[in-house]
Image (cartoon, rainbow, N blue to C red):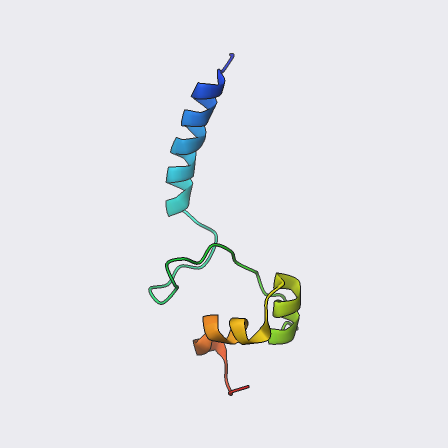
Length: 73
């Protein structure tokens, strides 16, 4: 079966819409609406290692995840 570029674009759009609802990433009412990237933590991670792997500042990790911080930095 051959698909044209238009057909593939429509299929991708429809799949993207469906897959957006079924996401492997966290979903929570307190997540900011403009969040566009996630970093999965691994055993032993802390704010510094997450910031390093995610190419962001430590204070951003703290700002974006206040409920997971057990003491102020």
